[in-house]
Length: 126
View (cartoon, rainbow, N blue to C red):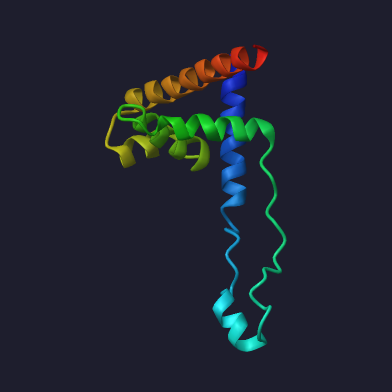
């Protein structure tokens, strides 16, 4: 199950990296379009963004639960390691910790995701 959790975190990081390039904000806001085009121009013409795959959505929910006190460190390490695709020396330098601590936090984050997956799978089976 640890391998599944790590693979899902890697997929989540890749999805977040790829979706961050276009945040979906229009170049011209609605007020400007109304002034230029008249009434009815405020309706969005941009197509919706791609939906998250199910595995990415599960990990996104899990990472969002990491915001509580001590778990915020896990969320930060996930953002650096899986989204930022940074190596251990870079993470250690940015977070002002040693590489062993960074490695331990990555392992803790993977364990946290693994426990989250097990709990959610049990709830779905009920």
